[in-house]
Length: 616
Image 1 (cartoon, rainbow, N blue to C red):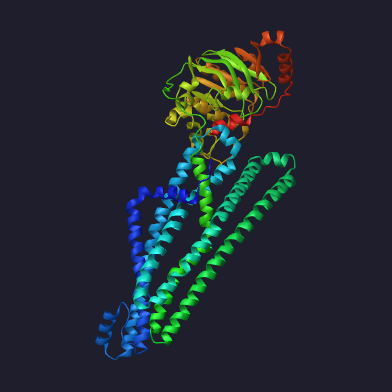
Image 2: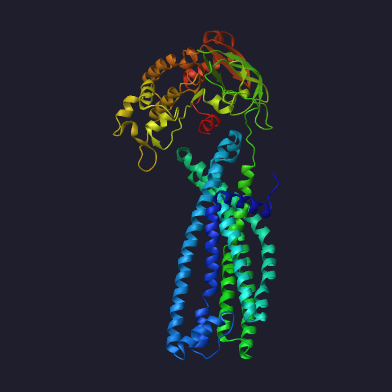
């Protein structure tokens, strides 16, 4: 995708302010009051220096009311000093109160903007294809949602609005200074062109470097996620030093780029300081000369310097945080690219609700591959009727997981058709189609929450009685009730318990029972169970399968023998199909597979695509 320029990024970020017009109006009102209060702050000091401690006549924009106050107090210098101090306190306390209200309102809007973008990213990322997520990696996605979502607040309330506020303050102060001394007023604007040049010179290069740093940091998060979700494998093979070296290599590159970015930000901040300090020194010299020539009072010079500090101060502060603002531009580009990524799988025009399907599945000359890779499935055709159990057998890489992934449309066929109940799966609305398919994986995926919540994930509106019935069917009720909190037992997290592989599998099976879908896809769901538990669950599952179409990726000989039809896959093709005894007689590869299944040579491993598919 073509990269968005900062101008377009700012316009996009500002669009998130629309729902908060009323709050923004209050914030702008507070900003105006804050600017006015800032204009008033130096005047008590001028009053003290020029009139309480000196004998200057009233002058400047506030000469009328100052002359009135001086006339009222007469020559009582102590009274004028006390009045000036009281005014100083009142103005500063009022300014602090206004600043607190302004900050609170800004934070309130800012946090809502972050939440809005985070919610939009979360929803859109879920709509993107499994292929997208497998390429990207979960660590990068988490980094994207967590870190990049701050850009919308930084670019609006932390970027555009402060600049607008500084510009308005500069304009108001210029008018006041112009009435005091036109030379000082013009000199106060002299730094603006130089600041614009510095900003233009450094902005784009900092944005580009920030985007590279964010990409590298997201890669580190991916590495952390990969290592710690596979920590058993890391420890089993003693690969801690290897992973440490991977982190060292990748982290060193990220560190180097982060240091280069910090150097750019530091140079930018230094240039801003050089320009503003030079401008202040120039105003101090010209103002001091005018005081010496008695064209200005010392109080006027104090007012001018305070005003310059009020304008230059925010500019200098922003220069120190400029890297964050430019990093936000980089984040905004990444967020825009994500939001503009079209979901690979969409509902066709005229797609219909699936309703309650019968589960008649047909594959007609299906061809499939991932991206531009070699073919995964070639000319696959078969028929599975309601009530049938279809077993898929084949060596690793034969295409078993890819085949079953086409039924719920985790991917779309390249050519041919996947048909359910006489209609191409692409003619159904995607969510309604997936509502009719239950999936049980060999390695169950459970979420942080209660056991009941994990079972109810199969059907969110299920009653407690239905949850218990599903658990009983999966032979999970007894072990659940043995826990202190029963179905309300928390899983995972600091306060949750951890279950054995067999217990996790039973909960996963109960979830599929609760969904009560007409199509079941299972990747050897009883591999973590002992023989007795397996027999009990299969007895229940046979009842469940009677009116459903079940497709099983088989890793056990007992599963193969129970199947109504077995599809033997090799190299992405169905080399034969039939019942167990038939294939034993006529397919040498199937005989070899059965011998290995009986001996337990084929590893009972879940293929990653299907596992991620269920999570997605």
